[in-house]
Length: 521
Image (cartoon, rainbow, N blue to C red; front, side):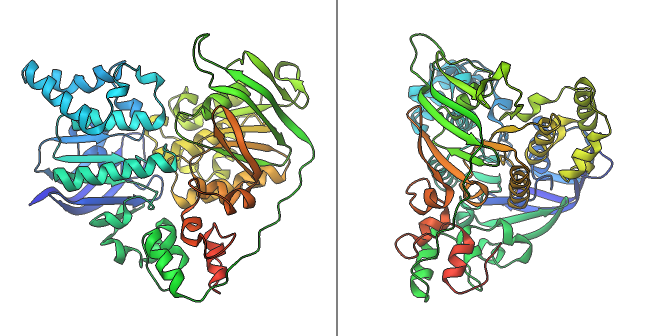
């Protein structure tokens, strides 16, 4: 039985000159788990939104789309976009209370869902107080309370730390296996669920370029950059999981150690945080509890840690958006208001930066306010490879496109310090690597970059220095090679594959070198 049938589907946004989807033909069987992949802006979000009438974007649509299972649940890229209430309890109750069912049935549905997904401890919490992982879980529960037959998930792992992401992936898999729910998941991170899905659909420039089983997809040239780390490390082989990768590594001749890369030494300090303490209320728990760090000119420092541990709060304190009750932040040795050192922050919700109806108009508006030539707007978009997005409404951008355009927006002020909150959220692997190279170029030119990220592969590849934020403090602040070579739970997939077999290996190029092959730079 088909749950979704699509034939010759075409769609173009009203504000766009070229189509977002072209001649899409596919079917999804009832109970299937399907992964939808492709570059940022390839049409994944658009396709998902079209499958649920209430979320369909405005534009020109042609072709056939039949959804045979009427109960469809949709989780957007940003959980906040789907919230309609103030507290967790009211959010869970909203859908059944507004359906044509009895109060007793509403209570039963809510109680079953709350118990099944283990969110009882969150019921009285305001939605605004939840971490990214907690918001994702509540968003899933608010959809599952109506027991959908089809579940559409848009980038569910992009805001989750690695440990939370693994738990969330297990939860999604149980929903599919135990309830028989048809699940279509748009995702860039193939380290979660890729090996468990029934099929991989790959979109390229709005067209369906591949529709394959996972192991067949692992051999498709167009999907190489999107594959799990295990599949990218072994030339001519297609292991899909860390376990399969370890078995293959153990069976092949390999070096027992790769050289630990040397890290540059930085001297000029641009940002200092000394013993910062912050709480949202006098009686509340300290989010920052003696946080200290130093950021140097030319350095890229990545801070990782669990969802809800306070990383975003730290960035906002460093940016001067929140005031600590103790400790100090110095820019070039002076307080922010007295310093000539300029800083800019890219927030998690990048669309909050935009005030005008198109990206190019917003750039020009910002440049005019700063007394700079408006011609710099087109130059910045070209530098980011986003010229084709100039006339798009910011809210019509995909998650990855919004991230890139948001980065350009904050770069317009020529900061010496760049504070980034999840800069690769929503980016495909190719765009993520491009962003990393761009940030390293800025560092080479003397900028200091501090990123808060859950993307450990990005941090391992491009950061000079890494740290773990835990218990309100910066822990394990050290050069990136040393940080990942010794990492445990917060490690890359390659590190987990190579553990106890190849010392110092935490990137695909390290494992490929140990195997005697060409490095995948």
